[in-house]
Amino acid sequence: LQFQIIFSKFWFLCLYLNILNINMRKLIFIYLIIAIPVNAQEKILLDHQKWELKSYKENRVLISEQEGVWLDNISEPEMDLYKAHGNSVTDKTMIICPGGALLFSAYEKEGVKLAKKLALNGITAIVLKYRTYPRKGSVIDWAGTLWDNPQVAIDSAKIILPYSTKDALKAIEVMREKAAKYNINPNKIGLMGFSAGGAVTMEAAYTSISKN
Image (cartoon, rainbow, N blue to C red; front, side, top):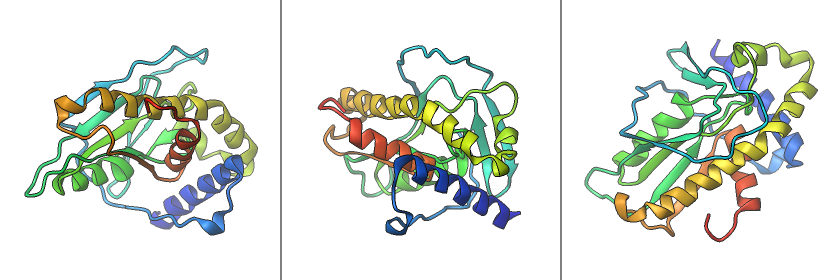
């Protein structure tokens, strides 16, 4: 099962390299496969323009002990914040974009785990719940049927990527505005992502402006 899950994520990653026209040989990807609790210290809702896509009920699914919780049908973006603590608190912040083919979010394994580790080492960390492709029912189950029709996954990703990217840019903007509240440096805010979250990160870098 573990091999099957890792291969699944690798397959979706290849789709995004296709979308972004990136040579896979130039990239190195590391997967963290540890399950942890998912309660953030603070949730921050992100203002966003209503989209023309139809929204559905957000689902939280416990995939396995190793994968933890996945989310799908995310239509209301928010940030889950973990405050820096420990013996060497810094003024740095990292915003994390979990992977999931833009169809779902591997929220626990690729978000919360790293956020808690960063916070423990003095870096304020945020797990970004960016918007994912909306579809009635379980998008996670539907994604598992796309092996023989990868073009559907590519087309779906192209539709949702601009919205996910706007959420990432808004997250940076909001944290800069709230820098004093959280004792962080507005010029030391990083953005990173796993798999599809990496696509969101790269697109945000390409389209950012001075405020983000």
